[in-house]
Image (cartoon, rainbow, N blue to C red; front, side, top):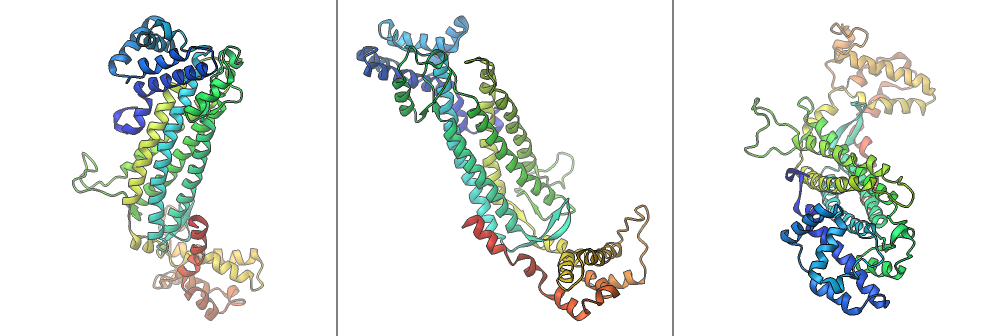
Length: 463
């Protein structure tokens, strides 16, 4: 990944120094296990640690790269460089009965678990920010929208609570994916243990913080990796789920929330007035990169016979790219949520902008509870709701012309609750619901009606 979207803690996992260090530990632990079993001399196993256990400096890495130019094989280049340090007599027992995939796959398992641990910590940052904002805005009323259109009131706190629950599920999936990927394969050619004792694998697995792969067939089955990257993809989509909401709320004509805009920050090279949701848009783009790893990971599951290396080039790219990108994006998201600016008055203004139309279902249900068929009640409420839209100049029957307002529409314009005004004039509704009853129904605190179970939802989410 490019430095712009990289954080050192995660990139270090994928640096050659860490990779070669893990390769060395796998080989050295295998030598210890072989020595305990009497397969190789104990002194040779000891020599591997004493002479080979040195930092993988740029000079050592350059030497490995130099050897690989000739051998065209990365693991052989690695063991050759190690042999130069350990000496021919003792190094001949390194890689005893092993195959390259034993080293490569076990190393990748460790790297992916290391990455998962960082990502889980990142998830905790996002969860903490979401929880703080959820309780801060728990009862802050805002208009809920379906299809982008005003529906019924909700609260800003419920939005944050929903995202918290979603990220909590993502965290649980990542914990499971980490468990699935944390396996070790030291089983030799085609995975039969013909040339190496299974107890070596058990020993190395314990030392590397892994569990033995039940059937490795020379490679660790790639369904494990597919699950891992699929989980990263779901987390990326959950990130986008949050930022797309912020992007909509930050639109100038909405302005219910916006990213923090720092002193001295510039929004546009051409237009000095701009305050753009650049962090949200950036996270949206980064989410696409993470999700791009999912399909290749799924396609890696199907390998020829006991192994091929069609998966190798893919994993060398998606392993670093997906984890580094997600690490950066999660940290950016946590900061964005913590500093998100909300505008409660704008939310309230939008909620009240269309004359109480959001209480339509409330009236519908009251009618059905008082003997009116659902179909009949729906017709009554809908025709009055459409009249409210028309009184605001919105006439779907004549979209190319300004709505023609009659005297009743003009009278309604003088009322804050136009829904009540039109319903109170409806003769059919009056047969079931008097204006006094209608007034009591709609004059009751509308927002309290819609938010009365917020505490119940919060208890389900936060305990």
